[in-house]
Length: 297
Image 1 (cartoon, rainbow, N blue to C red):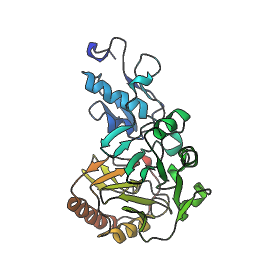
Image 2: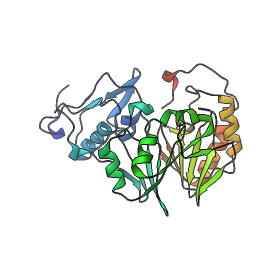
Image 3: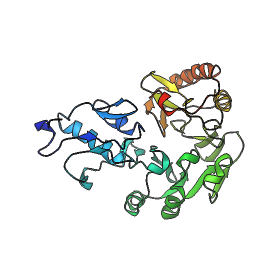
Image 4: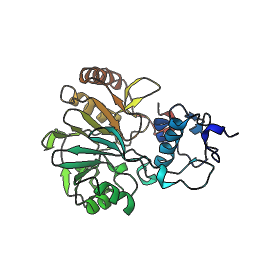
């Protein structure tokens, strides 16, 4: 691979073979990184500073540090995270191998920020988030993303939340959601229990604007629609379908913000229409073995 002179004097970007195909790099640098043979690969070298920034974001988010500049360790000054998605919404990056490379978010609310799932833990990162202002709650969407929850909650002085169905993944949680009925856990912040991907999966919806969907729902670039991860369902695809049908009419949002898969902003009415269509497709799904290669990114 040759170095494009516009990509920097000593940079020769690449993706190494530690890649676990978590999709994070393709979300952050979609024109530069693609999926091939079950992993990410670089399409070409960046052509301008904007593309270099995309690759730096991908590199700092990558849980296996597989996005390489060819110029040695990443310079902390190139770290763009937290990355603003909206005035009150930050993408945290620094995805963790211990949460399957999931995305995490920090959402500003009237009483303070809430963290939804978590990046990898380090004191430097925790101090960065603490400096932004009070964090009242760490919300875990399900067991796969629970690894660093207690550490962040303790460091930030926040309450840790999880559903009883996945309580064994965070047995020291401060607040435990129960049952399947939606519950307002703070003014304008509603937890929608959504068993399916795991027994204790939850969607958290803020102000009927942001839907933090964990691994229950995501935007698929390949289908151009809202989808479920039927190929990676640890609990029950039938229960996931039931959760989806139960949520119709009650689940309203503009932003779909998953742990895995792409993010998407759309009008509330479009989101409702797509969820109803998804429920129809899900009724035809049947249980099958977990197959990570079958995920429709």
